[in-house]
Amino acid sequence: MNNDESSYSTFAYWSLAGTIGFSVLVYVMEGSLDARQKRSYQITEFPKELKTTVANIDAQKKNETTITDENDDDDDNKTTKKNDDSKGDKKNSIDKDKPLLEQLQAKFKKSQEYGLDKINFGMISGTYETFESVAILLLGIMPFLWDQSRQLGGTYLGINSDEEIKISLIFLLLQTLLGMVIGLPFELYKTFRIEKVHGFNKQTYGLFFSDKVKGLILQCVIGGPFVALLLKIIKMGGDNFYIYMWAFMFCFSVFMMTIVPVVIMPIFNTYEPLKDGDLKTSIYKLAGRLDYPLKKLFVMDGSKRSSHSNAFMFGFGSNKRIVLFDTLFEQVKDSEIIAILGHELGHWKLGHTLTNFAVTQIYFGVAFYFFSKCYSSSDLYAAFGFDDTNSQVPTIIALMLFFQTLWAPVDKILSFVLTVFSRHCEFAADKFSVDLDMSQDLQSGLCKIHLENLGAMCPDNLYSMYHYSHPPLVERLSAMMALDDAIAMKKKKKN
Image (tube, rainbow, N blue to C red; front, side, top):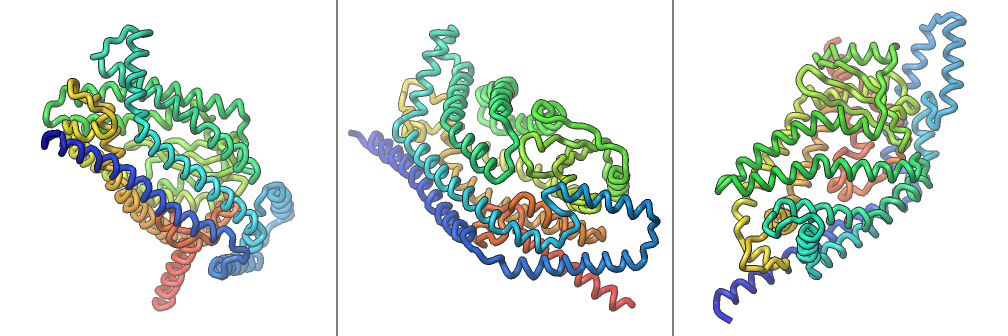
């Protein structure tokens, strides 16, 4: 063996060993965090800090209600309406007027059981995914699938072995189908066992599988041309192809942000305009107050699949839209919906949406630049079974191996940094809502959503710091209460 072959073998060995070692290291680290969170879910005593915080919210609400009742001169018609509304509320799983602490304590055990089921499932599925990724590397599954793609393309579609882009599309289809089949038992168990047992899943098997088919068709219709164009750009871009890759990714991102809410999401859910009434008037009033160019308000039938709730905004320029899950109306009052939207609009007003988009584009640009430096490194690809020196490694393989090997540690670090930044943005958006004088409604609204979603009430600090893009409930409530106290002190000094 000559020196070149020796260095080649050494590089190949360390590339493979390093990738497997990093996968195992991440598995061990995240597994230890999962174990910490599992111990948190086994706690049987309601967390004292959350108890104190929510008790303060209930006390403030009680004081507001007492003041309102003392000054209330409603006639018999209004009283009758109030009674009717109360009866309607009792049908919901959340009593909108009942003390929050009492309800949280009543659901604490169920929340812990739900979290424990999820963390146990996550630990099992995470172990399997790590084992699978290592097995794929050691057994040479990727080179095997590439060879099968060439044979299928040549035998059934008349594709020549040098038509790399067409073979790449077959390769991706095989990978997608294989991944879908392997992941199906895990998805079925999570959806129809864990989510159903804890009262969240509303899907039928028919709806579940129809979603799968629709998703696969969309991947072929949109993902196929996208990959083909991306590979073409790399092939034709010369030494600076990463610049053209970045420009293409930027345009594609804008395109997807435009069509996903308008074209793709309606394929899976029904969107209806929010009916005229006080809530709609209040939302438009809030949007006008913040100069948010709201054009349309929709209600989405999220209850078709799950009882989890959400709200989101989308749109470019002066064509903004807001979508509310139908489940939200069963869980919170109108004033709390307004406060939650005040928080969401805070993200827009504070520039978080544009910042996240800019960070994503910078990430792509940097990643593509470093990929361009590794693109011609045949030794790297040889370590993973693509050691044919007579032909260049397929571009799609080069991309996948780069992001799975050299870029994987960078991606993990950046992911954590973005999680920290996201938590900062959540606190800032909460403050924005507080400044709009919506603190009390936002606090109670968050408690009710957390209650209905059986969110973790005593998460492990390290686990939440690593995984949670939103701060734990008690941290958000405490921060808003501190802001309330500061505002009250300023008012007191002025008087």
